[in-house]
Amino acid sequence: MQPDLKKRAFALAGVAGALALGGFLTACTTQPTASSTQPGAPAPADASMVTGGDQPPPAPREFRAAWVSTVANIDWPSKQNLTAAQQQAEALAILDRAKALNLNAIVLQVRPSADAIYASKIEPWSEYLSGAQGKAPQPWYDPLKFWVTEAHARGIELHAWFNPYRARHDGARSPAAPNHITNANPAAVKRYGKFMWMDPAEEAASKQTLDVILDVVRRYDIDGVHIDDYFYPYPIEATPAEVAGNAAALDGKTGKAELDFPDQPAWDRYVASGGKLDRASWRRDNVNRLIENIYNGIRREKSWVRFGISPFGLGRPDRRPPGITGFSQYDKLYADAELWLQNGWLDYFTPQLYWPISQPGQAYDVLLDYWISQNTKGRHMWPGLFTSRIGAPTKDYQPEEVLQQISVTRARPAASGHVHFSMAALMQNRKGISDQLRATRYTGPALVPATPWLGGDAPGTPLVAAERRKNALQLKLKAGKANALYAIWARHGNEWRFAVAPASRVDWTIPDDDKLGAADAVFVSAVDRLGVEGARVQVWNKS
Image (cartoon, rainbow, N blue to C red; front, side, top):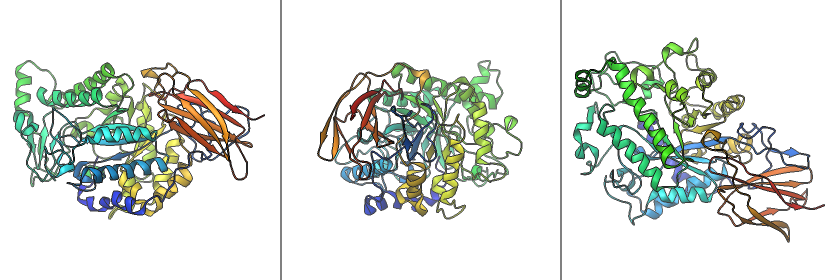
């Protein structure tokens, strides 16, 4: 997921720059939006206005998210050992920027390297918070609880992102804490180059990952669980033993002689027990069983928490479309992403499509169509975009590349969203990308597409009272059963305008338009945690 940590300095200005620049974007809660699409379909590319009609149109739907990396302090916090107040200020800046851009989800990395950015009895505090693994933020607070609370207060989903197997990152600067898995259960961890890696074949390693994820699901009000592309490690050359990472894979490079992952003890036990799979299939099965267990475990704990995976963007070689070439996660990471998708072991699929539309061998649109063709269960398809390549020292994207990738995605009804890697590019507004997204792609808010296979019961109807006050219409709101958000439509003249508010809000103001005057019709509906919209209630009608 972290394409080039050596260029981390380029990203560090993100949060700090946003704090200094202040509100270069302002949230417009009643921005005109449009949708002729049905619920669950992507919002149109230019959702600026809907005209006519006595009833409002369907709400625009699109998953609009950004990854917030904590590993190596890529996105948050901007550096180690900030005070709790400084960390919180940076988090609020990120969430405020997300709201201003009309994003509706943040994917926050909560487990970078078998550690935690939250209070855990299983794994130690991450050094990326305090500068020392095992040391809590000062003064003490729970960062994940803070992020969840503040995201929901803005009507933004918070998905908790876990690295499933990485135990120690090459950039770690503090000693491993006594309760870190490298000390507490060293047999479950193997050295691979400059990494320590939880061995997917060791039951204790997979159990710890599953326990960690389900612990967070139980204790925090998250909206989703998310895992990235690091299963077995990206291969490195046997000589010299370089850092395992995906930069070479993105470039299509392969080592002359790769260092094999040192899982011989577990393999010997498997063979001795009568196992029949070859070694590559056995490794894939180790990962497959964890994926299935995560999905089923989440379902048992909380039915509304969705599970997403963001694998490397190229599929298995024997199924690729003509002309597609490059790294095989199936053979090198032992990640059978097609199997997970086709078995429905996830709720959303976010292949990291980190190449331009025009790139031979890895064309964005061709790859997206491939993954759509593999999605036989009809799960959400929300590809990952390499937005942080804008302004990068090498292989620089222009903003137009990201804008066009969003348009390409929207042209495919089976793909209903996208995720930016990473938030730093949007915080810095690199080459004006944030301005352009807000002006041309995210002109108004959108609801997250519904997830009907997890539940389809409509939420209860909210109680709403409307009253004219000076130059605005004031709504008083009281949530009904299972209300997470309010979808609010207001008609000014012949224009319908859409807004989204968290169900924690008790009041909402619809100001008069300078040209079109006061709203003459207002409808409100509730939306639940799975994106299901309830009955629309007309709360104002100026005849």
